[in-house]
Length: 170
Image 1: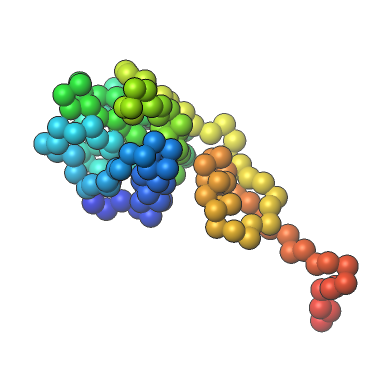
Image 2: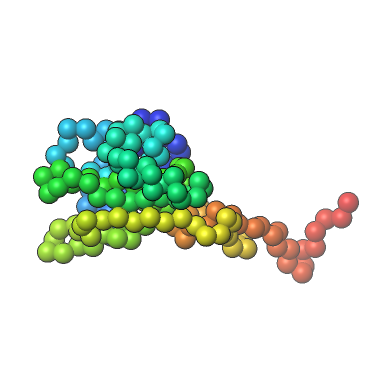
């Protein structure tokens, strides 16, 4: 994560780390810089807030991102080699970086005891609908997590009054 990552980017990194631990029993740490690291590394964020990500992404990713919609779009790309593999999640905005992390989480598999990703990896995606939501009475925070994973960005709330409890008049 970038040193000045937004709360949305922090949330995405935390959820991805939780997915890796829960689904694959792989401990993952969130770091602020991958420079000089020989370990497999994921860098996620926006080009504007994460200079290291912008440097690794290169002009091709920057150019491709400019052609995508400005809201909630992302590119996932593998760079490097077997010695120092890197996966970049480049969002057009923090929400795009979050959705990219959720997509990346779905791409992981485990084979022969090792965590795997398709390699080389390149994914470009963006929402077709500007507003995606569900009329839902959300009582539990985990439901909001599920809505985020489903790439929903809105929900409608309707107060429910049982027939024995009409709303107060006044």
